[in-house]
Image 1 (spheres, rainbow over the protein chains, first blue to last red):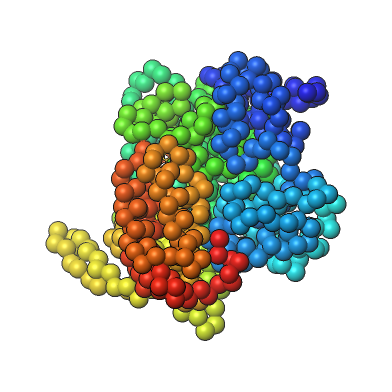
Image 2 (image 1 turned 45 degrees about the horizontal axis):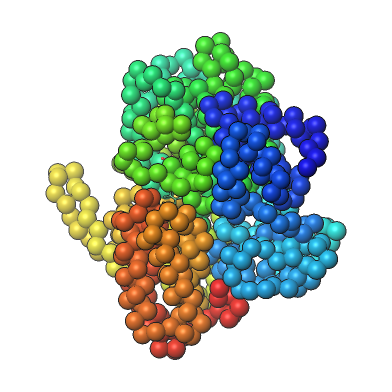
Length: 164
Length: 459
Ligand SMILES: Cc1cc2nc3c(=O)[nH]c(=O)nc-3n(C[C@H](O)[C@H](O)[C@H](O)COP(=O)(O)O)c2cc1C
Ligand code: SF4
Ligand code: FES
C-alpha cells in the first residue's frame, strides 16, 4: 500500500486533533484512506491499526458498522439517492430506477440494505441512502460529493453527462 | 448552495437564519465581520462564565436537537470547580427524517455557529470542542474547517483568545452515515473511535461522564447559535420571544404534500399547525385534503387530520381549563405538541394528503429504523426488523389478520425497554400509525389493499 507523502502528512496532522486519545482518529483516517483508494482494504485496516496502536479488530468493527465505509470499490461515479419518507413521497424510488436505467445498472434485489449496485463497465454505481437532510427540496441525490435538489427524472440523462 | 435564493415569509422572524439566502452573503469571515460578527464573542469574554450560564437559564431556551431539554439546566450540571477537563460537542449530525435546518447554517453561515460555540465553551469552561458533522455533508465539513482556520487567524480560536487568557481548540469530526451517531452518547463513542453504541443512563449522562469519561456538553447546531443571540439581547429579552416555557424562535422544516415546502424561522408557538400549512406553506395541492402530519421528525407520533384533541391549559389563577381543538388549532410549540400526544422533536414537519397510503408511509419509516438500529438491545434490534417485515408483507399482499395487533405488540415491547431513546423513536411511528389508521392496516390484511402508490414504490 503506497501512501503518498502529502496524505501521510495530512494523516499525521489529523491525529493531532485528538490530543486525549489517538484511537479517536480511526474514523477520520478511514475516511482519508477511502477517499484516496476508493475503498478500505485489509491492508488499510492493518495499517490504521498499526498507526494508532490498536488491534485490527478495533478498526474492522468500524468498517463493518458505518454505512459510508466500504470494503469494495464503488463505480467511478457514485450516486446516492435519498430513500426516506419525504423523498419517497416526491418520487425517490422512481428516481433511483431512472438512474439505474440511464447508467446501465441492473438492480439486483429490492432490499436497500444490500449495499450498492454497479454498472458492468464500473463507470457508475447507485445506492439508496437515508434522509440527506434536505427534505424540503425532495427528491434529492448526491453524485460523488456534489449535492442535487429537486431532481426530476427528466434531468437524469443531462446530469449523468457531467460525470464521464 | 443555495441554488435558489428564497425570500423569507412575512410571518417569519429571522434571527438564527438571518443570513440564510441573504443576497450577497458569503461564508467568508470578512462578510461576517462586516455585519457585526464576533461582537457578541467580545461582549461574552468580558462577562464571567457564570453570568453567561445565568443568561442562558433566564432565556428559557430549550434544545433544538430533539428532546427540548432546557440548555441552561444542562449547562448547570457541570460542577463548579470541576477538576477534570470539560468538553463541548456540537451535534451537527442532522439525520432525523424530515429535518433540514442545521444544513443551511453550516453551509451558509458557519461563523455564526462558531461564535455561538466559542461563547458556549467559554461559559462552561471547555478548552476542546468538536463539531460532529454527518458524513454526507462533505462540503459542509470543508466550509467549517475553513471557517475555523479563519477564526484562528483572527484570534477567535486558539491560545489566549483576544488576550483574555482563554484557550480553545475546535475540530471537525465527520460521521459516516449512521443515524445513531445523533444520539449524544452514541456520538461520544463515535468520537472515541468506537462503534457508536449509546451508553446507558444513568450513570453515563454526558454532563458527568461524557467524552473520555469527562463532563461533556452536547448541543445542537441551532441551540448553539441561539446562545449568540441570548448574549446579544440578554436572557430576559430572549424569553419574551415565543411563549412561556417555549421561548425564542425555531426553524420549522416543512416537507411532503404542501405547495411551498421549506424552512421557516418562527417564534416558538407563534403559529398554529393550520397557519403553518395553509398560510405559510400555501396549503395542499389543488383538490387534495389533509390526511396526516408528523410534527417533529419521523420519530414523532403521527397526527390524524380529523382527530379532536383535548388540551388542558393552566390559567393565571392556578385553575386549568380544558378545550377541544382540531389539528389546525395546535400551536407549534413544545408543550402544545406534547399535550396532543406527539412532540415538537427536531422541528421537521412532514405533511401527507389524502392520496397517501398510511401502510406504505409507515413501511418507509420502518425501513429507516430497521436499517439504523445499532443492534445493542434485543428489543430494538429484533423489533425494528420485525415491524419492517410486517409492514412489508402487508404491502406485498401477504399480511395476516392479526398483523395490526402484532405490530403494536412488538412496538409496545420496545418502548421503555432499551438503552437509548431510539427505542421510542422506532416504536412511536408504529404505535401511532396503527392506532390512528387501523382500517388501512386491516384492509391490507384482508388483501383488500388500497395502495395509491406505484407498486415499485413500496419497499
Ligand atoms: C436516535 C436519536 C437520534 C438523534 N439525532 C440527533 C441529531 O441528528 N441531531 C441532534 O442535534 N440531536 C439528535 N438527537 C438528540 C441528542 O441525543 C441530544 O439530545 C441533542 O443533541 C442535545 O442537544 P440540544 O439540547 O441542543 O437539543 C438524537 C437523539 C436520538 C435518541
Ligand atoms: S435502543 Fe436501539 S439504537 Fe438505542 S442502544 Fe438499543 S439497539 Fe441501539
Ligand atoms: S427524506 Fe430525503 S432528504 Fe430527507
